[in-house]
Image (cartoon, rainbow, N blue to C red; front, side, top):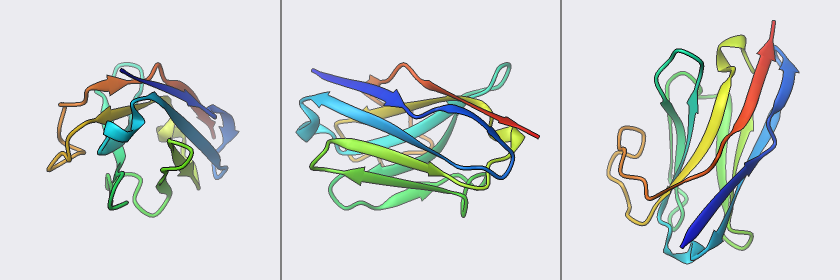
Length: 125
């Protein structure tokens, strides 16, 4: 089995930065696609950034492109999300998800096998 644990959330002012981490334990070697999602109160869940663990190819939602960076450290079995130039609209619970397959369109696919519990990001104006 695989477990995902997020950390690094917090409260920052607009323009600030955070680094989120998602540690993969268990059979991490079976994971091929990892994605950060977020969900704000009253809004639908949104995929913001994904990475293929073997090729390190990344994908970003337009809303975060140029501000967020996703990285995967295969040695530490950890995915990171660097959040820069944060805006109040980035306020949400951030979740990491992992799939055993190379998902064709990871930001639009829901076929993730494993999910973390989430870490809260709050951005004040």
